[in-house]
Amino acid sequence: MSAQRKDEVDAIIEQWAAVRPDLDTAAMEVFGRIYRLSRAMSDRTEKVYAPLGLSRGEFDVLATLRRSGEPYALSPRQLSASLMLTTGGMTGRLDKLERAELLRRSPDPHDRRGLQVTLTGKGLELVDRAVGAGLAAQTEALSALNAEQADQLADLLRELLASTQR
Image (cartoon, rainbow, N blue to C red; front, side):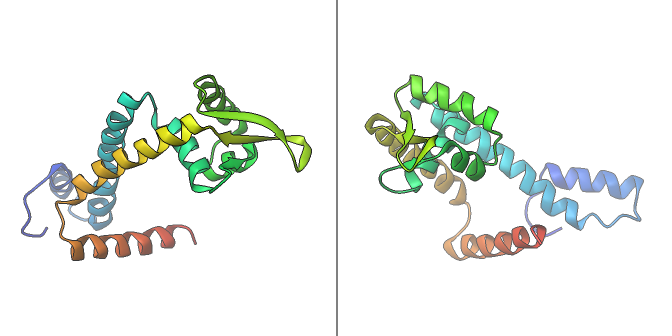
């Protein structure tokens, strides 16, 4: 353990060391913290989106459309693939967002059998506010590190993520 203050993961590691001193818990120290950090930031992000009337999943749909660039339109299949959702899970989100007039479904002009999901002006304005609010919360959390540490952490996490996808 480094000279940093102890956290909940340190307590878990100490418990394992007491009952199973033969275990190498280095991976648990890393992934336990990644898991807890992910949960904490997910909760924080949900709280930021809630006053805007959005859940994290709904934000993800709107943000995916926004990132696609003008005309902010994708097929339901493209959205499902991008968000790693089943088409059934996607349909529920699309229904709710369409009722709120944040997106619209229309026939795909390039495929008579398909649909196109398009961000509305209201949806564009809301997702732009939401992404700003979400980034502000992430930036606030990241302020515990200096710029060099944040860059180093991003590089290390990129490497770690890539190693799990081989």
